[in-house]
Figure 1 (spheres, rainbow, N blue to C red):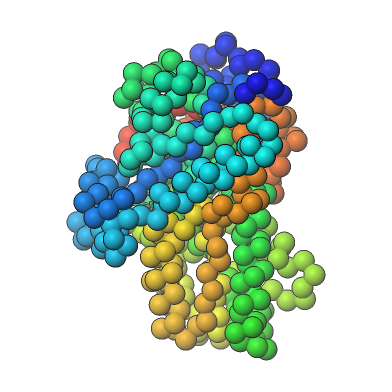
Figure 2 (cartoon, helix red, strand yellow; figure 1 turned 120 degrees about the vertical axis):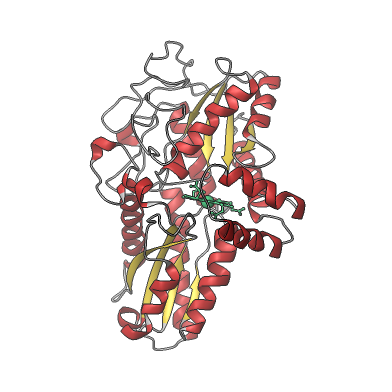
Length: 403
Ligand SMILES: CC1=C(CCC(=O)O)c2cc3nc(cc4[nH]c(cc5[nH]c(cc1n2)c(C)c5CCC(=O)O)c(CCC(=O)O)c4C)C(CCC(=O)O)=C3C
Ligand SMILES: [Fe+2]
């Protein structure tokens, strides 16, 4: 970046693990600093690009995780049905292009590099590219909005791993934008989508009573309960379900309130979970969306609006587990169903992601950062013990306070 930023800080605090941001920049009660980043690192999950990639990809994702063989076969079948091609890669190419377009429109000279945790192009490839271009300060945007091991710390571990793999540790510094579950740019598409979804229900079922015959299902990825309980900084004391569940509930309330403005009646809502994996003996967050749908007819519900609150794009969990499975479950229960779009490349989402980068470039004070829930704005630098994983043990992670 050439303008609107002060020079990057060089006195990196000793308790930081390879981060360009001093320890002071760690959340609501702390001051923030401006950093002159050289490039944005768009960091995502990755997915197979053809049938031959499916098994190696699944092995990458599940190594050492104790995922049952039947579950892997089941998930392989989802990918096979799509020609072995995950929709996520095309979505990330589109997002990269949209970010570049938005940067150009604002006259900001900041390149966007793209790397994935689990498939080509890998994070390490993006770091090699950064090094060749002489970029030493990267700001990562992970395609994941909430706090948990899988959605935050694992990204931070994989940034650290990619630096080690490329020998660029100490050469390139990586910061990350805050988890953005309550950023207006992320939430706006769900507000638009729920309003549209309710209109669709009312058109398809004229006279339906929103308050008693329609249910809104906010859905997100199930995770092991032990991960959920440890999501977020321990000192925030979130209790069972941790920050992960608290953040989803808080955002769902914001979406319901926004859509309810000017209406006399609104449906009831619940938070449900999907895409459970792991051994059956391991507790994961519940209720599963399909089980929740099965309970609805007995309460007189005739239509559901499914809001994929935990997801940023229409990747496999959305296309298969929602548009296929949950939609079939709804039909089997004689329910009319609508699935709301994910943020994808919604204009407000793309603008919001650039705003998240600029608040770091400019060192915007926490009090001036937009956040729609009382839980945020979330931390630039993750707190000690945040989103720990007791199943898999400790691994080094950057952009956080040690350990
Ligand atoms: C919280 C969360 C998100 C949302 C946040 C984020 O977006 O990062 C997410 C996203 C995604 N998950 C994805 C794919 C997979 N996730 C798996 C397995 C797992 N996910 C978990 C959690 C999450 N996952 C967990 C706790 C496991 C068990 C293994 C472990 O303990 O870590 C498996 C293995 C098979 C299976 O077990 O299902 C696959 C193939 C894809 C790509 C989809 C595509 O290709 O379009 C995406 C975007
Ligand atoms: Fe996953």
